[in-house]
Length: 243
Picture (cartoon, rainbow, N blue to C red):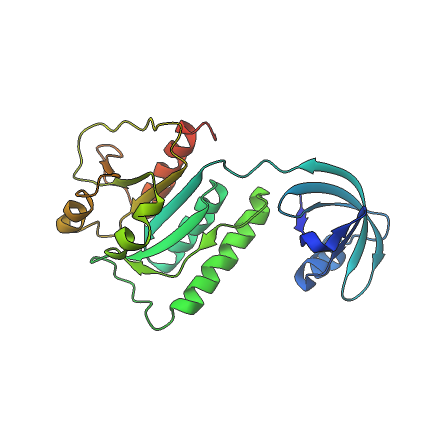
């Protein structure tokens, strides 16, 4: 099912307007929609069933025929701190984290990160935001996750730890079985995933000194970074009864 996103100010008195040029082109030239055809809309809070009443070069006017509350956003604020990995793998993490309901994605530079994006990080973040927006539309989320500018791993404490109830860190050297049950009043939950080469031991030891950090295990096998992200987020969403 295709769904198109509209600005809240473009919805009023049972009339909605689509003004995004890419969406207009997709509706008219790809889906071949015409006057009288139905499409689905979302303004970030409500889903609408609407019928096209007018098509022009710069907008599509629609009559709203049905309205329901969009409840596909997680009630928890999930932060993914993803150490930067190679291009296509990072793209996959951004896409799947969006589908799984992450609210904020923070690219992280740790000691073993092998990708240097210092000179082009603006373009990289713009690309990741575009990937997240496309994934958001595919999974029918009302809003796209926030993609932050990259930070160094040592900046997590200064910029984020006070905002989190807990920061979970999957670590291959943590062999004890992990308990994922979290207190119900934990609303801001972070997960930190290492790069291809894993974490330096001193990075983990430094983070373990903070009271709201918990190092966990994802099992006996060594997982790729992108696999660890998807696995950890899936387990967390299951524990939060989001899956």
